[in-house]
Image (cartoon, rainbow, N blue to C red; front, side, top):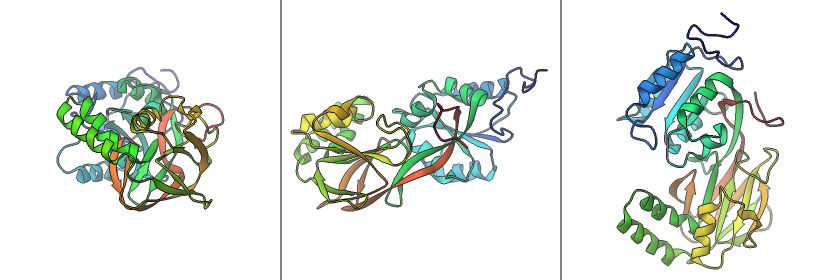
Length: 306
């Protein structure tokens, strides 16, 4: 048997210990499906692994407790973005490795880590060539960590409408859209970056170094102030903020920041890693240079690994 090869014939990554493996799986999420558990077991077996697979049903907290109680080397998450974020937040920088596979709708973090929306390809890539690497992120207040992006301000009101369209609930989408239009420019937010002079803007987008195109090193969050001229333009910017080259737009200005204070006259609408939330009228966003450790293929030269 060749060095590193398992009895099943496929060599596991030499960069990480993979003795105890757990997978949290939600068969009802995004692109997972009812056959996913059997398919995952087959892939683990290809690498000589017998994973403990925990279907997510009923008490989510109890499922998380079971996963961490196993003291795994790595927790694979095949579920939505919110579930992946919850596991990463609990693991932190000193916990087990986390492998958030693309099992949700937006899959922002999995795509950034694995470069694919195919969870089976991502799983095989992590098992074959994965290595521990720190993932930077941010935290809004005490309860809202994020690893890709947070949109704060009126354009975030469009997120429920966009999700309703995606799921075919057109009447609900119309109601959400009308509400967003009514409230789009009812109040601007104020923010301060690293103690600098306060500014006003329609929205503030905070992007982690993981997916930022403007930052070469994980030195802070990319803070982008958006000042669109009307509601349709705000929606356009918010919808494409994470994936298009929108920073050249004259209504957008960016700079890195580690501590961001945001306040408004009323509760602040936000979308945090794809999840709509309502924040208090005052919020502090903190940069987390080492939020958690992921198991993913070797990053390009210069990126942080451990």
